[in-house]
Length: 447
Ligand code: FAD
Image 1 (cartoon, rainbow, N blue to C red):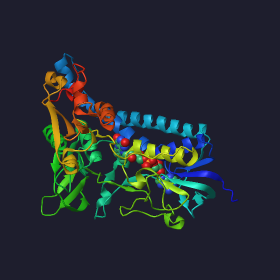
Image 2: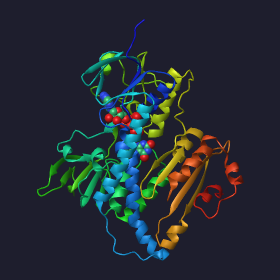
Image 3: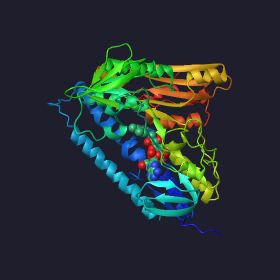
Image 4: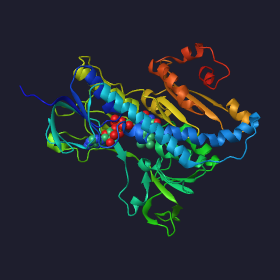
């Protein structure tokens, strides 16, 4: 019988990899993990966590204005970017440390190095070569930078958290959630933001009514949008900044350019060919429902498989892998009805089918909406309306989708997602007594 150095070797210590390593070790496997950058992965180091802290930090700009209407005297306001940046990075360091401690306390051996498959059981990690019975690839994804002349003048979400100082103006290429989140953050921090999009809309995949509402509110706040924009090349502006040349139109100029046009699976330099691992037509590692690749002893989870690029999904996939392969408790992740949010200003949150998807899939649907100005905004004199929408299957009365834009929408939607996942009916929503005065009570008052 062949003996290997490890029962499991995990490549990538991000959301999916760390969970899989920890649980597999708990099931008795001898586990090692390789990380070429920082333990915690995208979410902890340069994604969800620092992003959300910047969202909190930037929101004070509006809160301080609104506070006056609530009787507060605010002295001279000032904002210091290095203070916010350094405090956010200190929190990132803290979480990075606790992830590393988790691996150590679960007896997972950590290699701080790039890992590459030499064959289906052999891994080159730094200058060492080790073997493993089973391998899990959890290498995540990275920001896409297009192949255009001068594109390297832009930065990506990897760099944005570390800026020495804030630019006066920022052009953000993209229209997805990352583009809209950074647009909200940097606008609130006083940067002139222009969102430049190749398509004619933002947030493809989200319910149209919410996308329109965010666009309208963002424009009212002062964020500029340029749609149907085909950028051909970029050049440095003498004295600082970037100029984007757009087919037929005036060039767009900004002090800084941020690429937020999508994320690509991290598959380069992994040795996938040497191990015989196949990709799908999106360039991601092809897996079945159990995250199993075409190679008998190799699995893959998280963004590198490009199913749903969200942290809780990667974590679940890693957990299901560990329970199934080492815990004798097989289960698979349900990729339906996964809630998601855009931490824009105001935020959007969504679960289940959009109105358009439900009409295509179910035929007849009933739509219930509540379009209201939150109490707090009314007193603050802030003319920003929230919009909640429930999509109901006419045949069964089941609520198949819930979509919200407004303050705290993601916090409210997490609880609402349980009801949608549990396939509760609109009648059951109506049967629930409102909790007054809240914004969330609108969810049980839509008639
Ligand atoms: P990752 O967490 O990316 O981990 C992969 C790890 O593998 C990395 O640490 C990488 O360095 C390492 N690695 C890669 N190749 C190798 C190699 N060959 N050898 C050794 N190590 C290697 N998701 C949410 O759910 N909510 C959010 O609010 C949210 N906000 C985001 C904001 C931003 C700006 C970004 C960029 C992402 C955000 N995401 C969010 C997405 C989320 O971060 C990812 O879905 C999640 O981190 C995926 O986990 P993963 O385990 O697949 O990969």
